[in-house]
Amino acid sequence: MSTAIIYSFTSNKTAKAGQKIVDSFGESLKLDVVDADNLAEEKFLAYDQLILGVPTWFDGELPHYWDEFVPAMEEMDMKGKKVAIYGLADQVGYPENFADGVGILARLLRDRGAEIVGMTDVDNYTFESSHAIEDGQFLGLVLDQENQARLSKKRIDNWLEDLKKIFK
Ligand SMILES: Cc1cc2nc3c(=O)[nH]c(=O)nc-3n(C[C@H](O)[C@H](O)[C@H](O)COP(=O)(O)O)c2cc1C
Image 1: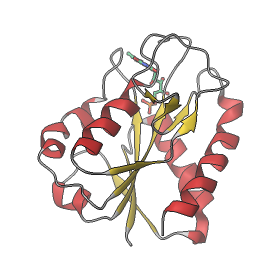
Image 2 (image 1 turned 45 degrees about the vertical axis):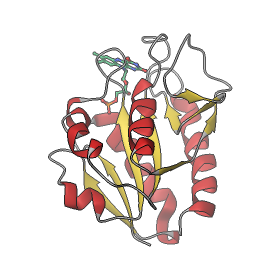
Image 3 (image 1 turned 180 degrees about the horizontal axis):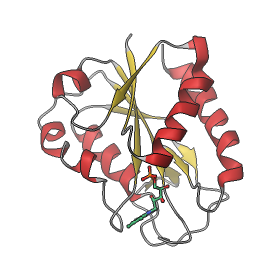
């Protein structure tokens, strides 16, 4: 199995969280680190297992670099691929669109056949609504560096404990 983590190298908080995820996996998983800026379709499709980093921008939207890749993803066959998504978000500044980007990417890729893994509990966040939620859980890991930076390490560690059982 081949695995990549994809995030924008210029997306500040998402890139820092991505580096922490890579460090925490350590030697336990061979992980390629791929820049989401100007992402090539062949690169994206070259992996069986993907970890995608997405901040929510523009009041509930994907950042421009993921948004530009949406038409390509809408044509992809993602069957047999496992995708875990982590999202950066701000529950105080954007309580009505909290971490929507996670839900947008998850549903899009699931519609193309991907298996979304790494759901997490919504406990200990305070917000009004989020497209990242399904069946009472987030469709990935949600980190809030603006308001809950102290909780991020534990959240990442718990998430990776789950992913280490799922990713081969
Ligand atoms: C203009 C703007 C719009 C944002 N919109 C949302 C939003 O709709 N929902 C949300 O949860 N966070 C929103 N955020 C917060 C970002 O997701 C958060 O600051 C994140 O940590 C940014 O990560 P980055 O440094 O990788 O871009 C917004 C931030 C900005 C500056």
